[in-house]
Length: 281
Ligand SMILES: Nc1ncnc2c1ncn2[C@@H]1O[C@H](COP(=O)(O)OP(=O)(O)OP(=O)(O)O)[C@@H](O)[C@H]1O
Ligand SMILES: O=P(O)(O)OC[C@H]1O[C@H](OP(=O)(O)OP(=O)(O)O)[C@H](O)[C@@H]1O
Ligand SMILES: [Mg+2]
Image (cartoon, rainbow, N blue to C red; front, side):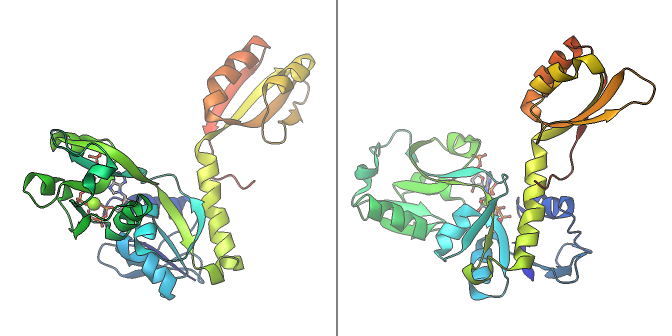
């Protein structure tokens, strides 16, 4: 099976990282290599531009791909969205100069919009019933409204810094994007594809969970159970020759602070909190 992953840009490192954490060690994924073997002899990684990944998967050059939803939409190909990997979060927005006549989508009727995402742009305006001219650019999109190339842009924003320094204001959101694991429909149910999806999902599930370990006086165990929802309840083990039990549980990261305070109040001691590498539910 072949997985297409971003060869450079901001998505490269986090993608290699998530594959590694999923146990799919990428052999010698050095710069400028076009493909690499993984620890699984059946899985090969292809390094491709983020924008080209949907086409590679749709055409069968790769079976699954990891890239931004914005790129999948722009390619207009029919792929199964198997998993949201949670990074590369950004928005595609329609934006115009702060001091311009463009204040709503309708103001662009008869106007011009510059973008690296012409297909997403056309779909967006078609749905809104207007048909502005679309100018395709390959970068520095934020400059175009200031040099009379366009009245507005559709571009990526995350922190908003680039729009702000270029005196551009958001007119409307076009798409929310994050990095996805996508598959060609005919291989989406393939056991190997499911294995990879499960392994990647286990990393994502573990990210916002923590493993709690503690010793609890035996007579307070029922109280402790009440405050630790855990994953199917906590694991309880006897401690030889002691009036206490060891309790292990998986808890949401957001609940760790409260849970520790609660169990301390119930006499728990030696509380340990650790990160979880993977969680296969
Ligand atoms: N500022 C951002 N914040 C979050 N995600 C982003 C941001 N910019 C881009 N992305 C996501 O990363 C994907 C690839 O963008 P990136 O800039 O890494 O690639 P590129 O533009 O093809 O590469 P490069 O900029 O190195 O030429 C985008 O399609 C989008 O999904
Ligand atoms: O809202 P912000 O946090 O400012 O991020 C938005 C910017 O990030 C991306 O550019 P990138 O840094 O990838 O440069 P590029 O244009 O060379 O791709 C995107 O094209 C925007 O310009
Ligand atoms: Mg970029």
